[in-house]
Image 1: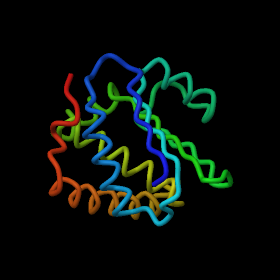
Image 2: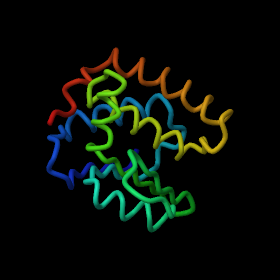
Image 3: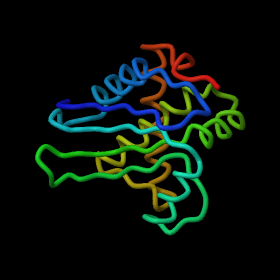
Length: 150
């Protein structure tokens, strides 16, 4: 990969940029065919996520993860926006660590970059299976629980 940027623009949860970078590197090695790519991962608060969700998708309220992909640029560029506050609620309800849930969102975003969609139930099922397999592999390589805490 040409360039990876990790930014934490929220204060509710501490994020280990180093561990996020390691997780992204592992996910990219597992899923990404195009090694020349600029990827930005930005952790944002609920208010900002709600604004972006409304502006770009016309959906009210915050969401967990949004992916913006610019494949025609040279090199291709992508941005994955993640809301740790929403992720924390999902992590609690699924009884997993926040670090594990954040890694799932990174995988989800990278799958979107790779062209996967989740608009239909069939597409969601395929994407979820790929997420689960990749998350399982990554969790054996590094301690995902240490990525974040609140």
